[in-house]
Amino acid sequence: MPHPAQIRIPAIYMRGGTSKGVFFRLDDLPGPAREPGAARDALLMRVIGSPDPYAKQIDGMGGATSSTSKAVIISRSARPDHDIDYLFGQVSIDNAFVDWSGNCGNLSAAVGPFAIASGLIDPKRLPKNGIAVVRIWQANIGKTIVAHVPMIDGSVQETGDFELDGVTFPAAEIQLEFMDPAADEDGGGGALLPTGNVVDDLEVPGIGVLKATMIDSGIPTIFVNAEALGYRGTELQDDINGDAAALARFESIRAYGALRMGLISNLTEAAKRQHTPKIAFVAPPTGYTASSGKAVEAGDVDLLVRALSMGKLHHAMMGTAAVAIGTAAAIPGTLVNLAAGGGERAAVRFGHPSGTLRVGAEACLRDGRWTVTKALMSRSARVLMEGHVRVPPPFSI
Image: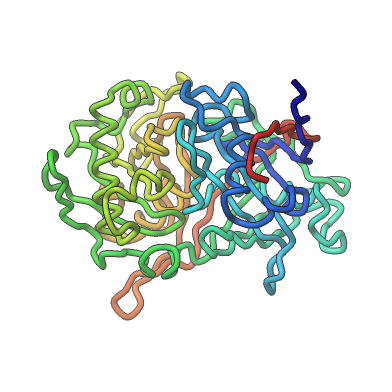
């Protein structure tokens, strides 16, 4: 019995920060998949290898973790003062959906290099040697990211000595500026602090009342104190991800927090919105051994943060959550700020399961409301493979 052949789609497989994903030019996608909707989602799920009841994504490009089950679509931007539009899809591993509700801060580091290598940036704007400034419109959340991409001999410089905890090998440093990262009304509530408070009492049935800082900067994030949940903030992945009851508690907190933040209208919507909000727990500095075996001393960090992504403890830290951490640390009285010792801060270095990360943010109080103008951090990126991804039917294109 004859069967239709696979189709070939130009694509690049890239690492950005502590994540990796499949990158496409919008114009290279099959016609129906160039528009949002079921055809695009079906195609990307098949590329990544989802939904997979075995949760391994063996028959696709995904790596069976939230950090590696990602797709990116890039196109030239028609917006003034922007070079490209960047759309990010978080592909569920075991369920049939793609979450478009937020950005990936880690893969943001790879967007500029991809755009340059793919010919989407005017060559007249690119230095032969030096730093190329790429202005990115993040289409999921409607925000601007400015990427500072090193160039050498007219090409993106990928190798270097910049080390990022959570990534095994050094590479070239890419500095990112997340401009005005608090969400607008379309992104969830129109406020940096959706409830209007730096700390709320969040009641979660079966758990009780928790102190929580709920912030919308970079990505909607709910911060709680590690101690309130019986943790120290030094936990590694296996300490959390092997505990089904703990994961269920975190998901319950996340769902009730999403409701309180106005991101969902009823609790059942949380199951289809796994990418946002994030849930994280914080603690004051203390020493621990990172997953690599590296010793992190209390004096190395300002606070400890552990965050969950797509229902599992992240092996390092999501880039967008790092923006939320930096912003919350800059606002006196938040749980993040208090864990770091309180007071005014322009930057913090926090400990995560793989090591440490420094992030800065510029926040100020205007007319009684906190605002943030930008957040800054460094990442790296690298092309892992380029060519074509092959996709078999059936899918609705």
